Length: 146
Picture (cartoon, helix red, strand yellow):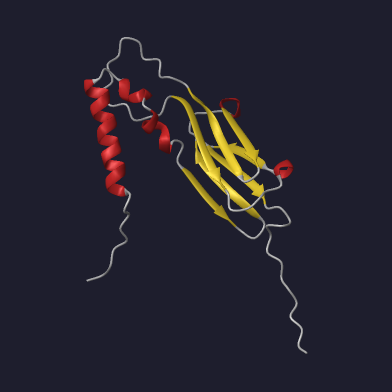
């Protein structure tokens, strides 16, 4: 019998989605405005290589006018607004797409060169490249033999 990877947070994600569904269904849509609902929007990936930190965020349907990227020290903040759906005289049977304001904050392990940060939005994917400061970059040290 092989071992399977198990995501300990998966049951909590299911619980959150079910709570949102219940609030939407029984509280007249109030669940769309609860703070816990937007905690995971947009979905992001964060990684690093030797030169930079990288953040990818799924922002389908938005333009750069809808998005702000702010860097302060080791913290990166992605914020913006997703337009509300304009379906007059409609009753939602399911409402899973995010609408309204969003904010995601990422704390990086080291400082970045804020003046050299690049953000590109292409096909609904925001890619942010944050060059590491010279202090944060790994330096090879020459070892001498005595």
